[in-house]
Length: 164
Image (cartoon, rainbow, N blue to C red; front, side):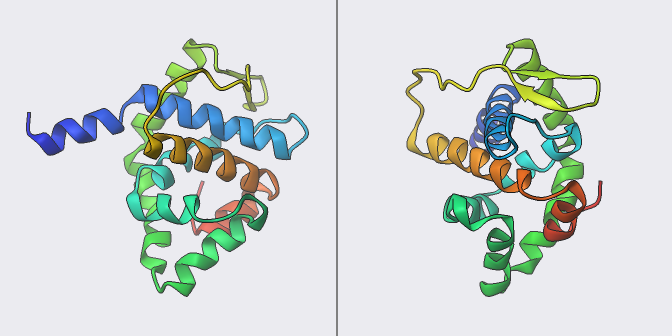
């Protein structure tokens, strides 16, 4: 296995993805009075966080700014191409997202109710010694969840130029 393939495997694995989905749901619940996102919304998390440039925009946007300010960064930096690529990355990462959701449910981090609402079981972060980069991505997942909780699924799709 090449070094690049090994690095991709270390980052793009269902366990790490499960943590990102869990923290996304925690952020969503914080902004939606305990409600969780629909399962559809989860398929946007990994395409944003596992892409270096879009993750940097998420990390660099304040929580209070919202999803529209996150989108505006793409426009102001003349990088709309990155925004429009989220939809294609979401399609490419469907299998990883589904596997990550299974891991998070199996680890009892998330539950899915009958209406396809995904709820965090616990909101307490484990005492884990993650690298600084992983901590930033975990925090970005929470922000992304909070931002999406402030908009409808339709508004989120229009803002991020994606289709569900």
